[in-house]
Amino acid sequence: MLFDSHAHLDDRRFDKDRDEVIANAKKNGIKRIINVGADIKSCYTSLQLAKKHDFIFNACGIHPHDADTYNDGIEKQLVEIAKEPSTVAIGEIGLDYYYNNSPREIQKDVFARQINLAGRLGLPIIIHDRDAHKDCMDIVKAEKTQNMKGVFHCYSGSAEMIKIIVDMGFYVSFTGVITFKNARKTLEAVNAVPVNRLLVETDCPYMSPEPNRGRRNIPDYVKFTALKMAQIHKLKFDEFCQILWDNTHRLFDRLPNSSDMIK
Ligand code: NI
Image (cartoon, rainbow, N blue to C red; front, side, top):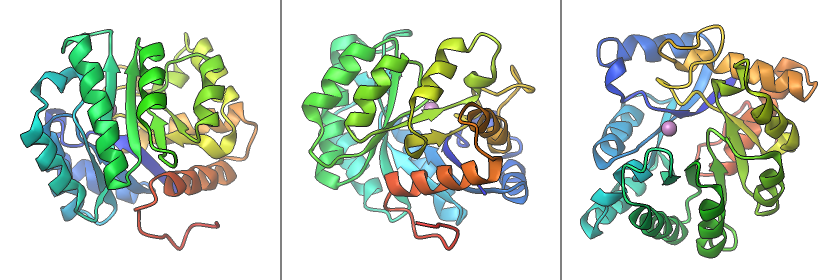
């Protein structure tokens, strides 16, 4: 009963065994996956994956690393991909001041443009924020439409920032990072999020949780992260997985209804 809300199965680290990884995920109880685009090429491959597998959905957006590739032509392509019924969000979009692969001014501009695009399309946003918390919050607050929903993926901010995110109506998603020994600050953040605003993800092939830290991550490992989150919130694992499942469907409301949803 698990939903991996953020995967990159189009990554070249899956080129040798992609079909096998996807089949195993399904066999091992990963009931739905959102494959998230990062550049325009991966937006198309994510769409192809979603068309090929009925339990995979896709998101399209230009990652801050590739912000300097953004132009009107790319935006038109994103609009086309977003028309497909399997596309459930615009993402991942945001700011990355750790790598600064694109100039910051361009990252900010492209982030704002894609939030506006999501507003026009009526889709939620998947936000990548690395070492850019203040600018990221400022842009989201300034650009979001009133009813827009979104998620801060692979959350690395403070517990204090959680309150602002929750007040905006947004969700917070965590990766295997919370299973690492030095994760104290992130554990406090998990604890600060109301359970009905939590999501879980792998961000595979990156961020593999313990006991597989350092190895290639796969959707199956989302269970280790969900287990840790359930412990922090003192909930039974099955009950918590149901909550995560419902949260993910509430946020990404273009997902088809599931008979497994309780609300
Ligand atoms: Ni990602």
